Amino acid sequence: MFPKSFQKLINHFSSLPSIGPKLAERLVLYLWKQDEKKLEDFGEDLKALKKNIKFCKNCFNIAENDLCDICSDKKRDQGLLCVVEEPLDIIALEKTKKFTGIYHVLGGVITAQNNQELKINELKNRLKKGNIREVILATNPTTEGEAT
Image (cartoon, rainbow, N blue to C red; front, side, top):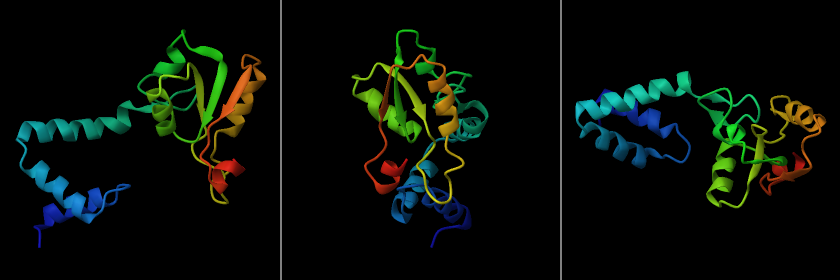
């Protein structure tokens, strides 16, 4: 139905979370209608994603530098630590503008496949330093989230 180059892009978009085939088709058609400069900029930004974005060395949030903006902010309450599953959880909490502490991203939840990959040892090391006076566990209310 679509040319091979279209179908290839549709397949790429369809492989992303929450994007089905119909939305992928609409995205590819939208991009096809854009001017070349916009597409070049989009492509360059995609290339730069892996090169420029890394994990914060302190909390494992996404960052462009060694420390994320939150860990770099001296106004944050360094004694209040919120433990979350993923960086997206930080974004949701930050949108509330209620939490003024710092975070620790586990990188997922405990499952039979990934419990060794979680940043639990790093969390223990942060807690051993003794600067944290309160820990808030903000994992999802699922079986895996509760087990974590």
